[in-house]
Image (tube, rainbow, N blue to C red; front, side, top):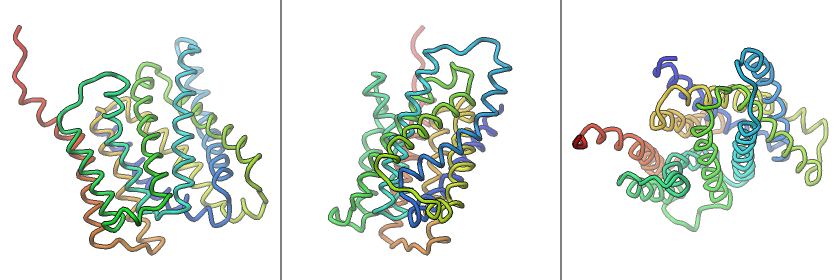
Length: 298
């Protein structure tokens, strides 16, 4: 697949996720967070299952147990990100959630340093500072207005970074993007059901009231968008992938204004711009400076 097509898949994922923030927010008017997570990922599992079966039949070699284990780890990171994001939406706006979730673009290189022991590019540190300043402005220019939901969403961004990092490590070598997708969805569904049954009530009225949101999140935000992410990351560079995926923040703000009537203050717009600039800076500057480095002596 040409790189431009792969990047287009990632951009589509960002747009789907951006609209998904609205569905995730409005769904909780009728249904509790854990049940929403369980149902959306159960549907996503069903969406990915036929593709995974076809992929398995066409595979030249059987799947290794270590590969399945790695897929489960990706699923655990996805579940942690989904839970913190969903509960965060109880106490923050769609716009804030979209932009704060996008901080994973800053977290990815930091985690790479910590766990892969790779020396960071110098732009990482000013990029992280820019992002933090953007959060400050997005909150209204005072830390006292940051809600618990905002903090949960920052934690969510950390888990998304882990998920993105693990996919980058395991997806290219596995050759099983559909099985990876189905496995991570199934892990989220099983854990979601296990926790929801013991902690949250459920009624048919709740499911009916959030049915549209559950179907959108299950078929599109979870099933389609995450599959496109896994496929796209196999054919494009990590910096380009992060840039196109981070477009979800812009789409979340757009859909929040258009569909929910949310209002972004001028200083909030400045914060959004700075956060997005930090994302682009962290990913683009290393690529721009790569060609300027003197070649190593033979």
